[in-house]
Length: 242
Image (cartoon, rainbow, N blue to C red; front, side, top):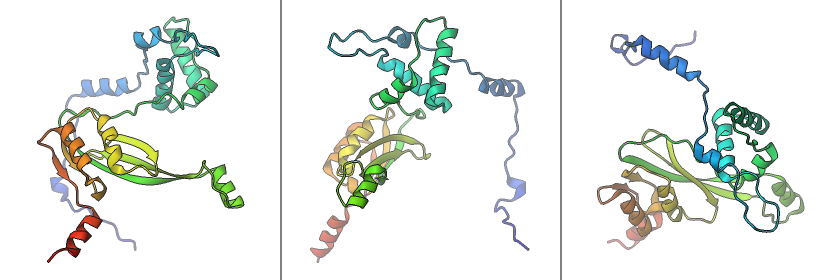
């Protein structure tokens, strides 16, 4: 007979969540199904970029237009063709005689226009925890390198630098080459955070003078820094100790 895992909390002391304001609760449930989407006037006025007066093909859509379409694609998890149709339908509903970016344009411009990540707003100082991990890139270049025993530029490794708050939400991230040091990327990570720092935690790779300077500039003199010393520094201190 399989044993069942019992809860450690006494059932008499478990909290019961009850809805106290049913009208407001029902209005919130109905608002979840509201798909009303409206474009800002700034994006519509700059939908078509001005001529660059340079030789070659001119762009038909500005960066805000591509960013608007890619943001809707990321928000509603749409493929490129459905994104094109969704943006075109919204422009028709708004009565704007503007063309929606086609799927090939979105796929090509996606490499140049970066969609900002949706992050949770923080009211007060946050506890930032940073670390990095290596990512292996696979593809045709990796297969050719193994078959012909030749080096290729398509394969290799990349380093993902990520920072989370004390609730586990990602507040900053960046992807760099494998040769970039963790301490050198920290100013870029801190530049993506709008809230002030109350506490900073990292491993021994961030035990440098530049890291302490950047953290102090981002959070002021009252920020707490928790960074263990590097292993080689600890080993050197033990070797030269009494």
